[in-house]
Length: 292
Image (cartoon, rainbow, N blue to C red; front, side, top):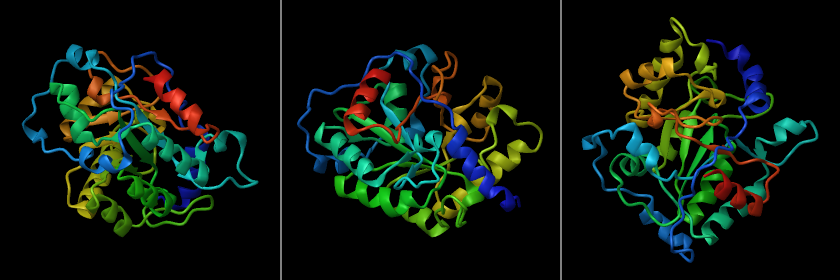
């Protein structure tokens, strides 16, 4: 459809993604700080039947400690053409590996949306020092670099896919193919929707709901064979008027970046922070504690 806009979209994502939130909340910290990374595998799996969970009232959900959720975009080495702002969204390869090692050495265990959903609604137990790793925009390096790195640690992640870019080669970045997305899903990671072409959610009207939600959902469900239940707002921007549209399409949770959670719909305004390309593993560790 609008493939000619792909290059512009790619640059826009890097340059204008919303800033991370600095909202003050308590951190989720387990007692077992010596847990080994090898235990992460069993802790990323959940036996709960979330389809039978009744959604709790907003006050109950908001009272639970927030689970740290990190948002990554590109994982590659910086280029001379990368601008100062762009580098904030590009984590260099060795730095990313060091960040993940820090998480493992610090006893963090990755969780997936089913576990988060059960925890927020019922208080279901989570592993010690839970954390969720999310990756936006379908970048190929998420398959070639991120996935092998996480596998070595027994970590799982959530990949939010922008469907316009599937299988494409851009001026700034290449993107994952349908087969690669399916492999991530088959290996136990979660695939979520990140719209068709990253259009600002706050501006949706008319056929935007079909183009940006319905068609991407259908394609991702055809690729993975699984129902889409997770949604990430482009630029992290949301509005209350659009949340009912997500609900009636079967989305269960939606993830933002820049603001506090909505007092009425906290499940559709779940906070994430961007893991900056400028952060060392120590800075990332401090940011997790200070942000959540």
